[in-house]
Image (cartoon, rainbow, N blue to C red):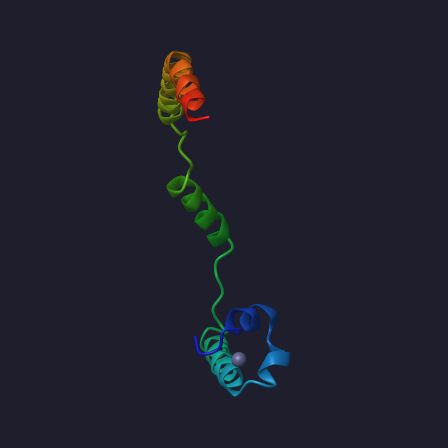
Length: 106
Ligand SMILES: [Zn+2]
């Protein structure tokens, strides 16, 4: 994109910005030309009334959300439970050593 404000320009219509930016004004003019060309070319064509429902049905069929597996969650739980169990076993054994080391230092 030539202008960093382009996306805001396209979303908001861009009249204010385009009044001051030549690049964006030229781009908006080109987009308006394309829009007018498509409007003229397809003016007499309209979609059949059943098209929207057919598209929605096909999208629902092809992009249906599958039930996610609980296996990764269970494996995460088992892994963290093992880490916590190991810490619960090892920490009391090493705390006296840590206390002794700290006592020697101070
Ligand atoms: Zn601009």
